[in-house]
Image (cartoon, rainbow, N blue to C red; front, side, top):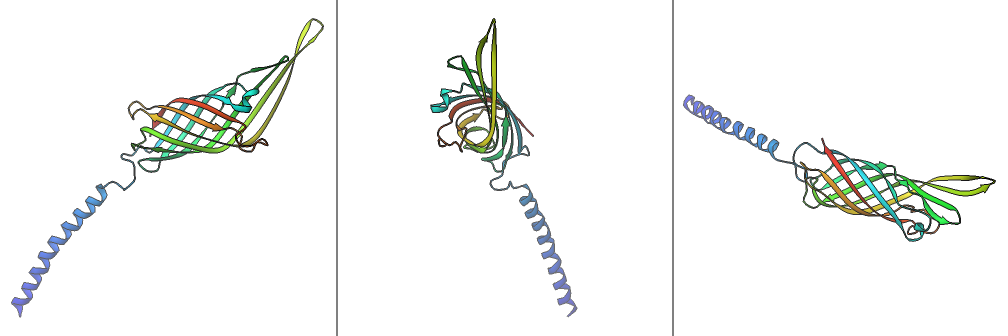
Length: 212
């Protein structure tokens, strides 16, 4: 009886010595394995500073000239291919002569939510992007008139909030050289009384991304 008890204890100790290391190895392997769909590394956040050039086309181009300005984007790499974030900035409208001594200009302050899909993953390489949110559109008018020997400028401004969106494609060169180039088509005023296609613009951005 005592011999059988000793045999059972020895067998239990031997099994325990095998199970504990195996469980530890499994836990280590699980900790070391990358999460499915997650980007490699720890640099998931990014901040980008872009310079944008936008050219209104179609009906809105009759009284709106080119727009130039800086944009700032905050992004989070949710998976190896999907980035979500926000982008905002100021696009200053250049004057456009519409004849009759009148000059107009259209400026915009976009505040949009964005999503980008990177085909190669890791936040670099070619991607497609879509953004939607709010636009603060600011239109300026200036009319020159003569009064005696002096020329007088009559200025008028109007601003309003509306909805806007854009879709485009671009390329981030690499993590070591994070130059971001993008071309896009934008609907500046989705709530226009003339329809969402009344205020269409094409544009391009060039920027530098900082990963952290």
